[in-house]
Image 1 (spheres, one colour):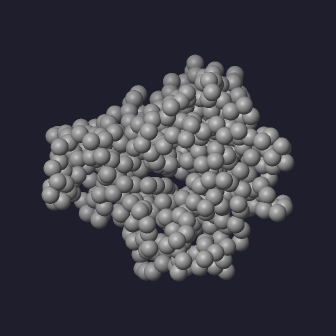
Image 2: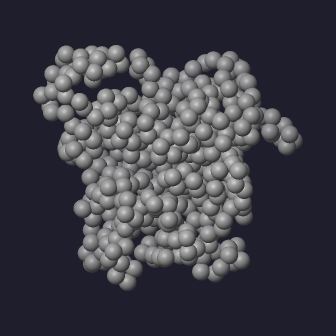
Image 3: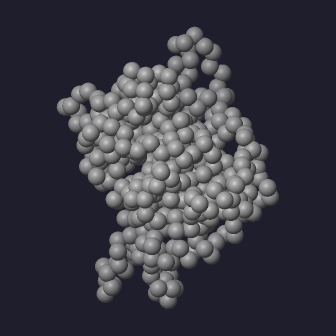
Length: 487
């Protein structure tokens, strides 16, 4: 298939940005007037806000504060970090790592944050694949390569975990069954939706401890799931079969999807909902991120009549380069926007909508296997690229620990290896101009880190400070490292 990249800026994305559905929009005349009259310094912005007769939403003031500077402090683990997200109120940050630990941090203090609690994964296999925090911050759920999700209290005074069995074979039969790749709490915290390796999506009722729904609409692993709105009636699922399916629990005829979103030509790695029951964001192994309006979906009946073709090249994204071309257009593509420039390789790279309070919902962003966080405006223009790989490469702590660990195992550390970080996840703080990136890095990308990237006035491009920093190890203890010597 030939490459058919969208024009940048894309008029469709610009129209969407000015529609009012992605934050407050000033009139074009006022935008032109304000650009001429007011410089874009922080002081002038504050003066404009306080002296204006018209009171605009705070998001219009903050939307240009896009993170552009990397903190010299970071969180460091001796295992790959698979996910890291802020809580919805910004008071927590939690990570899930390959050392079978879910860590919760108190983010009300300055970075590096205080380790609040560590949840050790029970009966986990290979890694903790995903974690989700309830909206009231009381419960953390995590999954692994087994059909059992575990539920734990976020209170440091409460020990123990509750297994939630998603399998039909029972809790004692978990070793023969599938793994769960993605989980999300419902808005009310009463249900968990999960995507699994048996090509199914599940909805689990926490109170009754039973599976409410098992939806079998996909033909390959379901890598990503989420609720589409606050009611919990709309569900989205993304699979390695290249399809995103939309489910409406109010009209599940014979457990059939409401419709299908066609456009990706390789498997789906992640989906994120705007939670308005309308807009959805997805990452695909075809090296594209897509924005969808589910009102443009293909109905289930029409999809069956299409006899859709499989356009996948069947390349192994974990080890191989994408054979391309990037931007290959599906003949029935119903997405609104397509974003390119990042890399979706090595692992299930995640993407997100920027939060409305700090960005006015005007941006989308993604991790990337090239070691960067890519940020786009809705019209497809690159707003910023944060080079996490360069920042982690300048942190000797990561490479020093990797070398010492090889020595302890009796192995020779030769340097080299895969020195490019892989940013698997990123999280934009709901109320501050801060992004936390969760990455694989160190020698052969076997270490993990969380780095903080913030907006700093006057910084035009991403900067990697070369100064003494503090690395908070996986046990939460502070170790000083001299970053003047790089590896």
